[in-house]
Length: 370
Ligand SMILES: *Cc1c(COP(=O)(O)O)cnc(C)c1O
View (spheres, rainbow, N blue to C red):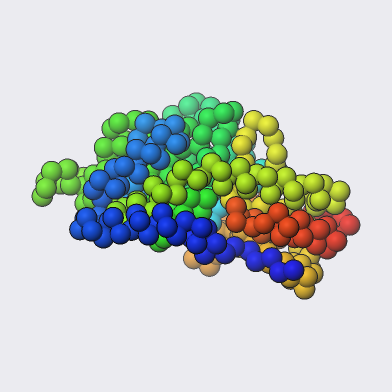
């Protein structure tokens, strides 16, 4: 059997009728940027998250920039984020003029380690950006407490975690603002680039609305220095068609993750955090193994694709060497050499995942990672 990592056409084909209907509605409307379709999706998505407002923007990266600017981050402010995140989180922070400062992460949850966050806080720190990486909420209790104690803003990077929750509350509602991506591969994906900022604060929502559209409130009246980062009507219409399926897709991801766990529990590999107070939505199913590259090539020989998210930490990238520090980020560095993402999407069949899991079981090294 061959198990591919991700085939987006499977989902698009099952929804072909709904998507075509939505797209032709927009074609006939003659309105292609913002407008009714976008407002409708924003309302539905805010309700889904349990947030008061959602503001549609051009991408997840832009959502991070706009969320930070909307909560008052200004050029020169330091913004702390996770050392194992992907580069776009850093791009989003720098586009707001802020200085990204990395903090190391927890080995089991792959999310920000609050103790290391506390270590890197300086008088210039203005915000913390926890990343709910792979679909697992970061340790929101301790992070909110830190933000509170030090008078910092908390802006969540929810790009991989639509519908994930911590103690029953959905991500996107913990900080003053949050950023979502609807890049096609995400748990809720558009047919191109798209993103959103969520917030419970009406002033933050209003500023985000201005910032995405050149700072303009009424026509030709500019109150802020903004961007061109608006959500297209076509993408909003597509997202509104898909949103009602998101819960079922997330449940399917969790069921497939349970199939993996059943098989892999008896190996020496380290499995994703399964704590009861966090609802993991498995954007990615990431395990840790010793001898990762050998493991992956055995999987490949047996027809099972895998990937690594992410092989080179930000501070080890040529463009971002200045983000490194003395002693580096040992946990993020260890993760980068031991993590493997196994195939998992709502469209994978049970048989495919059982085959991938059995194959991974056979290929698993006998020793624990690290
Ligand atoms: C995808 C992603 C982003 C960026 O979103 P885009 O829509 O691709 O700009 C930011 N942070 C994380 C964690 C992501 O996975």
